[in-house]
Length: 449
Image (cartoon, rainbow, N blue to C red; front, side):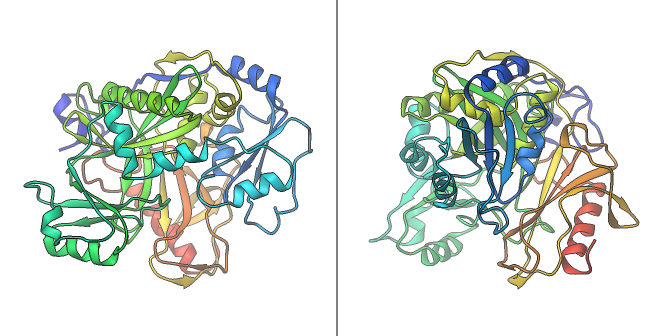
């Protein structure tokens, strides 16, 4: 059954419904740009790939608002680069809590790094400590059991009730899903406990429902809840890891059981309000699983997520400031003028191709817009995500040619102006998306595109 099949809406071939309007919060684009111009002249975006900054560029750095520069702190070419070095420049990083690189890059240039309080970020990202945030926010989670780091009993003692399978999570954050595993019985759970000896773990009842992600931003006066997406996890052909993030596609209320979309927004707002009370400011993502129409919280991502690139395209089409600008304002200002709109949900999706084994990479496609001809990506006209044609895709290299990569490492992000997977609990790639994945994988394994 499709996710929205129980809601009785007319379905498209992919399982997405044809009536696609959704409520999202934000700041009016013109007002937001004026507010940004009043506080900063430059925004320096720090990440291994400029894909997220690129999706904000139709509004930021194109003669309107502050200049937007994208840098890769790990790139030799970018280590010495700066923007125009104005006194009012700030840095924003994809995942500033994940290692010291972004902070060191900003500090080395005397620039502030706009990020949430590190202690609050660490609490939110912790898979065990986040349970306390969920409880205080009155948010439901799958039934779970905490496993101590030592003095453990046998695996059966940590099996939560009469469930058919469990999900095991390490407490520490991991950006690509290596800290999450699936166990169908006591023996598989014991293998997880043995492999992760000496670590505190969370063992949760497996919920056989679709995964969703909601993007939100905590300001001093409000939690601003933006777009909701269907999250694609552990898809064969894209990754070998069960819990790895493989992509997203934007969804509307009519793609879900009745009431589920607004329930997701409510959960995100409650979690954001709890984070605010702890001093958190800025963007966060909330991963959930749907049990029929009930959203159950899984984890908090106290940072930008890959899906924010799709979210920013939706925000700009709705006349709202993109999330990157929203994050800057939330970190700098005591109050934001939030509005709620109900625009059409753009048909946008993305997929992540992972390394299927430990290896040294040969070639990778250059980042840019492509079209597919006879199974080969051909460089196309220059487009951004906001106005990407259906017959094109954006490819973003997340690794360097010649680099040594490990199984599960992200290699290429592919972005589409179309649905990428069926809207089901266990999704399958559309024919078009499968063709693109095969073509990009062939580029990685063979001659240059």
